[in-house]
Length: 151
Image (cartoon, rainbow, N blue to C red; front, side):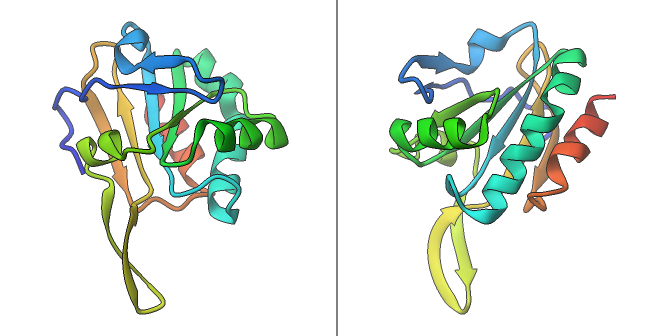
């Protein structure tokens, strides 16, 4: 996990509509940057839907929400449409950003070791500096926790 107080690495990835988005595009706004394992899975859906429900409060607090996974643009589009997600989902199929943010790690599930995304959320300030970092977050609780971090 990246350290609080460090500059968030800039990146450019395609969103759910295929448009290229860079972290630097959001300078001047706070950003909740969350990394999740997969579209349409139970934990990831709970987390995304909770961020969606709280989206007006995040906007009111001057923050933008960005979700990142290794899923494709097409997968993100289906996820957005199925659950009416009002925020940006970025596709990192090459895992470059997942690696840069130190969330692509070895995981142990049911005794089996594999590489995967460790559910992690960063709060980035208007200048692009990481001000909060939460690793191994609980999917359902994370959005409310991040809203609290903003206040």
